[in-house]
Image (cartoon, rainbow, N blue to C red):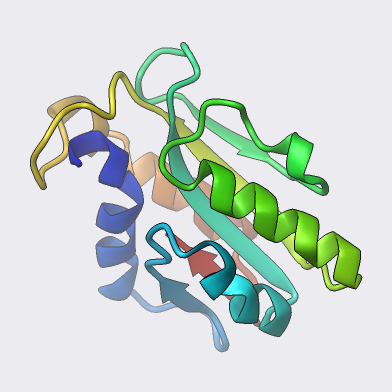
Length: 142
């Protein structure tokens, strides 16, 4: 869905590069509870998602959510599934360290598989920010 798919485009970029040992990249789509095994298997989970937060398109923010309420209110299609998943992990006492990179987009109504020029232009900066927090035994969830 155009800019809402920024994480998928980033996953393709990361797949073409060398990552630290034990780091995996996964397109989690709207997996919700199907992603539970990845949150339990890795000590650190890095999530990239688009958000409609009213900030200028291309704004990148790092959030370190510990509770379901720590997720932005206006995340894209992952909103409900991730909040529920985090709530379940907390109840189970199996919460990994989470780094949530949210990228502000203008709309999720646009159709297509390509990013707008605006979003395509921030992919390199987003990758740099993610590489700063990647460490061995982590999963990057897109």
